Image (tube, rainbow, N blue to C red):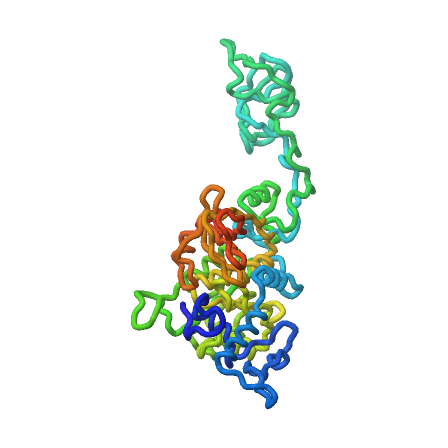
Length: 475
């Protein structure tokens, strides 16, 4: 989806249409800003228009007015690092926290433990054989019993000195066993007696009861992410269900009359790229996408959809600027929503926003241009969803850039890159409306205001499928 309108205001040559429109708040107004102050309390008239000129002050020309409005918005816009901090902090408020749920092991992958994982039994719960071979008692050679001991069989009879019995890996060790002789370390003579082919030690290849843990031991702390290995540990420790933080529920509202859901673009209509892209991306961030709705440019439908939503997070696409059919800000104002972030000093994606609809519900407004929407997703939705799900923040890391990257004079830039050895290589096709670069990328480079030179260490945001694989990241 792309924006509508013309370029005006500061740095027009560096802005996409929707970003430029976001700098010119010319009548749509804004929702309630942080702290509950109305637009009038910020010096406006209350409806989004600038204060009237007084007789003692000269009237501004339209161009001067646009520049002043753009300057005000630049001052109000939040820096990129602070926007991410605000998003994470919003989800940690008491009302926003998701209540733990009990889930089966089959449904727990990717969730976060809401309680410590404590062993319900000793592991192993009885002495077991670590190898296929013979359980032996006393020094060899040994007489071998006819019947062996298999894993899962009932308690075997005690051993007598000079006796051996065939045993399988994982089988219960017979009482009075001295050691387990591996199959490859024993031979039988013509009389059927078993001899060791190398020196043995007492207790060799026996896993004693409680070797890994004792009943009641804490295996993992609350807050651990449930991985496949955690599922295996939980099952081994006796669990059928786990107490976990549920996936945040997200509803996606796709806005724009110009969007097609199939076929080729034609007659001024374009394909909706965000409808297919956002749900799997949100799932890769740990969310449960409850629905994707296409509303067009309909203020009433948008208001009805937001008020009816039971999701923890509502994500809208497009309509965050101040064009004639950009309805997000007026709708938030009508709902008396609290704007936590109204514009971010980042390119692409400057006109993104974060609002608190209720104490336990938030809205992230993404710009309509595809790469700008990705920027908003990673800037605001990712920290919010991560905090809602109680997932730990990834460790930040940086790599030097292979080539220099042009920067915005005032704002952070997010640039698609591929990782080659110990360098990040910037990709072309990184404009707000483009997906060609991000489709080939491994990560996004966080380029500070002013740009970055070749060889400069630059923070990277990994794309989830680049490290985990397509199948692994969409659980």
